[in-house]
Length: 544
Image (cartoon, rainbow, N blue to C red):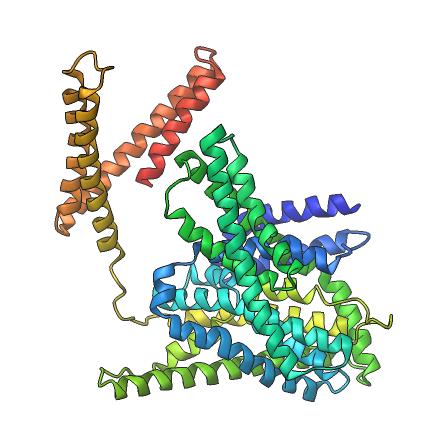
């Protein structure tokens, strides 16, 4: 197949994977299905996809990291910031050093800088892979927030360490002092570029919208281009494009709180980003499956050159490295928990015991995924001298093997490990939701009353009796909502509320069928049909 046909086949494989996943046992995560479909594409294709490392990195990583930074729960991130930083920064450095020396000891033919590069790129965890597993596994919500926060930050720290290791492999030298200064600049320039670009683009977009109005689709396209802009600006400044993308996403989450975006824009943008995230994550795993045969052949040649003629050594290396990663992660998590207990003892707080099953679950939940894959495929093809990059195929194979083994281990072990466990009570989300609905409804009633008075006093007011009647009807709607929010947790009322929602959904479905029937019989136009169906769809989302 031609390259375009291969790309289309990959996108179709991503679509098919979502349906195939529903036919398989729940324990099988979606990424494994996509990897298998990628391998099937490789078997049917006459030639593989030739990847340009820098282009691949630019195309996939900025939007994914931007979206992670945008959507991660900030309250959980700030509440557990100490634990998250210990995992995202300390554990990454601990893993790079420990796993780097382990890999070099296992494979002496692999240069130490390349071993550190491999250790750095397999240090970041992937929340998408874990979320796929967690959909059928009772992982505590707070633990998921910690894992998501860890992944957001260790993506950046792992990729920065990877960049240093690759630079050492390319130049053959490494200076701690120079690396420290470079690291500081990478962080400062990267975060500054991400925050600055986001604020500048947002300000320019608001100014243009105030002066000339907001064109349809333009804000969404600008939002899609934002992570690429932040990444490229940071790279021009010799900063970290990865940190820029993450910082841009986090900044965007705070910019959103200003509420300047139109409601229609927010609805459409959310759907677009969901599609982009699903497509990019899926294509990366399909691409992993498509590349596996060539990666395996290249790794086999590297093994033969190192003196091992048996390709089973590849499996031994892959399992040994994965076991080393799990051991390092468990040791760090245990030490972190012991430190937390020690702090509680000093502060005379209630001390909690370490739950061995939860400790093991936290260790296994650190599955690797898209960031590891995207990063390792950016390894240079050749050294500055023109010689091939040492052990490149073997490094890529081992990184891909760690992804597969960690996914399989988590998908098999986590459901069995956490089955039947009871967890401490989580903060009540319903209470926060009720608080928001109550405050918003009271603010709405106040705004209605003020607006009514202004409209009645305006010169354009023709009939003063219209506004009190209209205000009474709108206020009645919000007062009904307040009554619903202020009810106690009455199981009977909850049942009635659920029944009302079911009846509303049935009524909306009947409305939609009728509108479609009127359009099919040409009794209303397509434009009117689309308008009415959109209104019905928006109402339905409220009761789902």
